[in-house]
Length: 165
Image 1: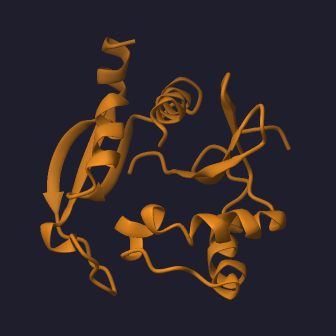
Image 2: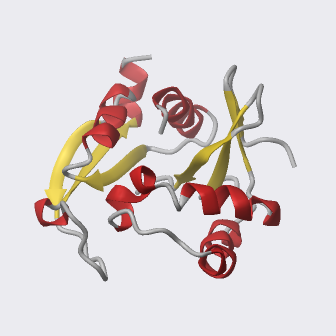
């Protein structure tokens, strides 16, 4: 299967069963998980029985949604993953993913959400051309540090994207 997206620096590809160790390392990095679950590590069993099956579930659905493994092109280093859901980051990868959504997949709107206190993710969204839309309170099974401040939604419409190309 070809890569979903390829740039000079990285590519987004479909997940495979061999990604268990990559996901285990990622989900055991406290900084990565800080705004997801408060920095708690995940077990191999959770990765194998819940995380990876969720990432594999919708594949291949190229025109509607997808989870994509991000990999550095020259070293093969696993960088993380992206979810693409039309109508509902390392920054250059987000810019390229947004471009693909509008230019190739013909979506009308791209949105992104994060915790209000996650300033790094908010900055990536802003640098990628998305604008703040609203604050909201998500319904999560477990509260983590910072969740009391709620979440934020950013968006970029096709019209806005076309005006700034």
